[in-house]
Image (cartoon, rainbow, N blue to C red; front, top):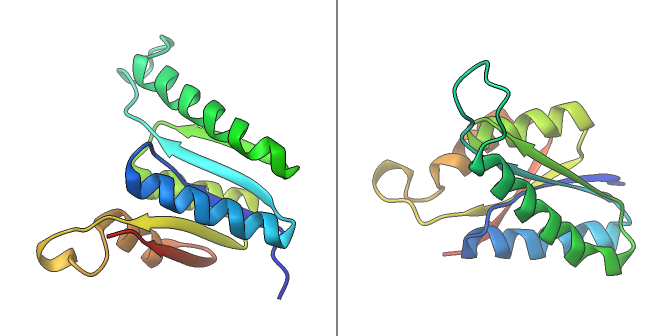
Length: 135
């Protein structure tokens, strides 16, 4: 099976960092292009103002992409003003991703085995999902 596009759900948490590292390692080994996705809360609907959240998301992605440059992999950055699971699934669908790489936060209660974002992605993903054990 060949894989040419890897989507990595990313944030600055320890969970996000471990998923990022695993996703980059996988994509590099496969020679695949990398799509890094982070979500943020946008400002009021219809506004054209660039929010602090958007700027922070774009900075986060720029730093992450910089860490990948040495691998020679082709990197695409996606800062999306949506819920994390929706943003990741949307980019995976739009890009025709072969696999999504995400972390698993240690949720409690009914979602204890798989975090709520991971559960939503697994349930709606258009492709395979690699959930990196992080807790």
